[in-house]
Length: 550
Ligand code: F6P
Image (cartoon, rainbow, N blue to C red; front, side, top):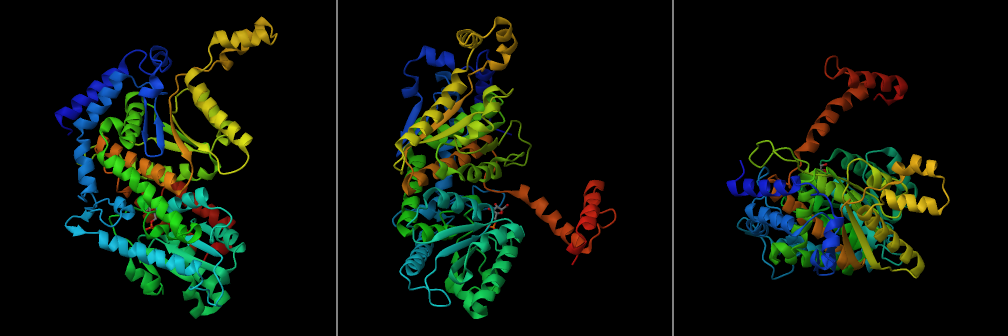
């Protein structure tokens, strides 16, 4: 049961949402020429513009009242104090400590965790620099040219997203990311690598994940075939909390970089899991990434709720999901370097907020996590934006714009920005019957044809979006951006009263895959063990791939 105060705050919000015209945005702009200034906030390098939403003064007041009723300040304080906010697993969520500096205080329960954080970070730096300065070499005494990071979920998506965003020619090493337990992926990636020049990082918090361990074993064989069994150990590194399992796999202790259970997988790119970034981008870039995230941590921790970017982003989402009943959201970065950012957010948000019960275990009485999807613009405009403009259910959008490019093609960048701004404007403004009619008449279209096409050419408008504007994309601003969304997720967890730090929902499939695997090997389903569809499909697969038994 929620407290009376938060029930009353939700009720007040829902009352505003039920008023006629509650979803309309255009009248708000018409009534207030200063709307952009009043509904945008700056924190560090990031500008958040949420003026293109149906949030009025009354709605914002109700949202902030909800945040207060949900004791957002208390939640923030407990999060940063290292309380066991991950209640189901009895753990703190202290990814902020991973980007903290000496002198910052972080404790998990009663333990001061900063000495260990700084010690692991120093070991990572020493290792990365030794590789760059060719003091750590391949088994054959040559320099490493490539890193192959083997991991999945949070042990892949965060680092792969950052590498895609920040890697440039001239960086110290090339980065390659293998996640899927699909031999095609393994073959594709190893075909372009020389094992004798590749450093393999096995990135797994648990060091038990089926996909990662299968790929790690294939990679170990691949290395051994090239540089021998003794040589292979010079090419392997483990990033894990499970030191017993890394030792059993044959990785020397000095090649293991650890972290602790208070780091969730989807929040782990700042930990040893980020070693691929330190190696491929250089230590200074990795340190700037951490510094950017730390700047956002400090903002989130101290800024008043009404000025607090992660809190405001979360409140906008609550308005859309709960108030207006919009169940999904698109993330459109207008920067090709952020191509993997939507994928990272999918795990961060959907693994965190895709929950159906409250912390108490009682079923949630209102909707929680939105479906998140996205692609870089302008590509997305030529695929799914049609539905966002004219589909039956509005899909709020996060536009991410970068003011200054890092290339010399200013005209391309002007076009990119023009498109991003135009899409947000089109979603808001729409195009009514009068405008469509006038345009078609001006083009000389016959009246009967205008009448026939009119409904198809109308855009309803009033479709909400927020825009996050970065001055440029670099390690420091990217750190701020990723941490903004991390804290948004934590805030939504507190607003909805669920645990954003566990992920029991991924377990059932893993268990069933473990049961099905021996049956695929045997070429036959256990009678009565599965539903008819699963058994039937197994039979078909066995017939189509008889040599798959083994
Ligand atoms: O899919 C569930 C999950 O536990 C994610 O939360 C995690 O990021 C991923 O698997 C990988 O886990 P690990 O790092 O332990 O291999």
